[in-house]
Length: 101
Image 1 (cartoon, rainbow, N blue to C red):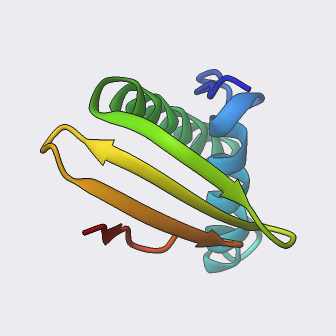
Image 2 (cartoon, rainbow, N blue to C red):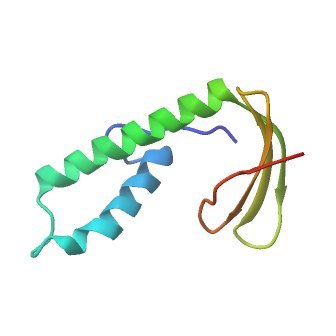
């Protein structure tokens, strides 16, 4: 499965997930809800984050192994541009990577 940033409309790929998270977490801060103009800004932000992350993954990381455990539990072993190997454990959300070895 390829990692796709999506679109500036945040209607596909990773940008759609980022947009939904932004909207879920920030909408309640606006009485009456956020304006459409603000939501469009969030869509652009979501795409910018997704695009940057995909570019970073494609240029800086080399995935060594991915192990899938129980529901929403992943362990990714990868080497970064710094030459070090890391293990990231993801359980429902992202946690900081842990150096290996």
